[in-house]
Image 1 (cartoon, rainbow, N blue to C red):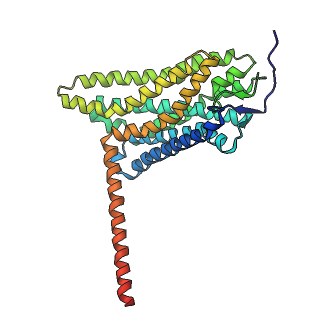
Image 2 (image 1 turned 135 degrees about the vertical axis):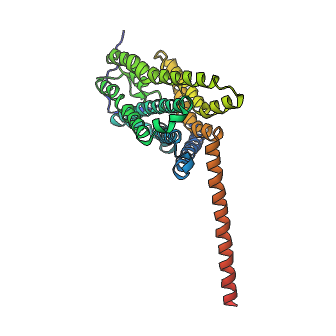
Length: 332
């Protein structure tokens, strides 16, 4: 049996979404539209949370952090598609590829941790409403956010260290549109058993299942507390406060479970590429839509700012007309 070609790599070749030249322009336009919409939607959330004092609460503080994560994640994962369509260059240096893999893993971890923090915030708001402001004070919120950012960027380091110890690869063609861990494992002809074991134990259990179970436990208490409310309107109002967060949690965990908890094979890599595209494009743009369409506070803040901008434009237009009239009479 012929041994695979074992070579040290200095760069990878990103296969991208498709090799068909005729599809590059439509894909570029679609991805660009999704990317700009993601940036616009999440930036709107950030500006509303910053400008509207009614949104200066723990829930929207974590939502603002989640918007930052989504913008960074979309930028890190989708920029390769845009560059390939513009320049035709599919090459990415080994160092850049490892760095991209690190940031992708870290931002996924950050998203899961922030969703867990938001579930704890909803638990306190519904199960301990009288002590909510005391428990979720500014210091606690800042501490939780710091822990989410730091832990998310630290727990991916072991994966990067193990990947950099791979001595050879069967090919430099990466079957993905960004540098992800599973395609790199598939390409390597080094012993990947340690990394795969770490991925199952630390990745699936610590990175994935721990935040998932903490979120589930929070919602068990939340649902139990909601069911104890006697009035149907009270139960509806309580569930409404966490429905947006629950929608995002179900959507993200469903795609991540199908994407990463599957055998590493050629077929699954193609499947994972589609799921990665969904996570990179759809989830970040759905987050601001879900939170804005299902949240009265965000919709009220957005309408208030739109009305303010409309009234301000009318005032400026009237002021300009008045100045024009004054200038006309002065001249004549």
